[in-house]
Image 1 (cartoon, rainbow over the protein chains, first blue to last red):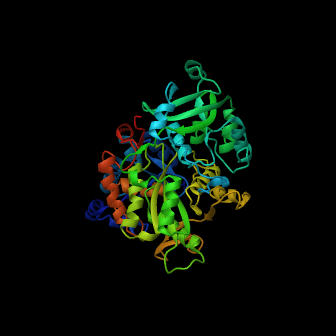
Image 2: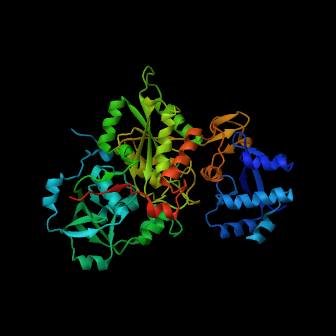
Length: 98
Length: 418
């Protein structure tokens, strides 16, 4: 299976309430002393496309191997897609929409 | 005998009284300088760069590049140079032996006694200092942007700059810092270099280094202080805004995570070169001039990308004697969160390596950008709240540098009219 690189969507109370309402609370993982996060995978090609489309974003190659610093509005859109599809495999569809 | 700085030389402030300055600058040709040069003028004049008394001549630059020492043998790792284009030199009609008045933002800044005008091979300089010629390296890029010629000679500031709020109380010259350290009764101090708002990984770096520096000293009264020395200089989009960095470090003490008698927040003005190990040596000299006895160096100190091994900035100190550097490096590994230990712990202690959750500055920035308040074990709530305040007050709603912030921010310093 090809390596994937997550986008970390950090879960605040509002996002957690939406996940709970959709029965998706179990999708969250815990990082850094209990902080809830939704890890949305990207392929290497998708990662590169995202970094090109959103130049403020950064691939943390040194520590976490994740895509960070995407604008909050972009993360909201990805989060809403996850809730609608009840799946974290949404990046293909997300990229078609931007 | 006055205060002895880096290289065993006395720290001498090169600053004129306003009345004397007004006389001395009469009739001098005026040369406006950009912010980097104004910053370095301030650093030279106050003695942050002691024993430098001005911008380097060719022999010093060559010696620094090739041997990491000034021509007199003092350890020095990064060239401090003043550049002008051939056209500017011709237009101003300046030559070696002239004195000129440097101005910044239209106000007098310093008298520059030009001793030498010279060429230098920038590719060679970049390779020597940064270990690469890759223009993606910010230090290399800066080197290639230098104009045709370097000018060497002494600098004398024509009055003190005004350090603007909120930075005013945090700017301590080397002589002021030394006085402050004496007032605090600290016999040892450990410097924490920063360009970040602190998470608890940073907090533990400081606390661990403080314990290292404390050693055998008596504990009835605290005799060691952490001196946070934030580097304030050129910003890149996405960096934390300077105001948040300084005020959030200070709130760690105000909120009690450090006692009043063991912690001090301060700033130094400098555009980071990201020279990794060489920048670590430069930071050591800078903090030695501030009178600090120990300097903490963590993983990938002052590095960028993958140009340096994460611990190059530790190993470089192996080549210097105690006489070379009047400051002791405190070499530290990483602090991480361990879910098994259920605490922030140290790489040199915790064996749950496969369970570790690394602090990453980028990750923490990402969490804050998402508007999520991290657990207090990771990020102090007082710091989180202050970041939001700083974003509103100084960052036009953003805690991170944006083009708008760069355009509208209150300058860190200004030079008064004479």
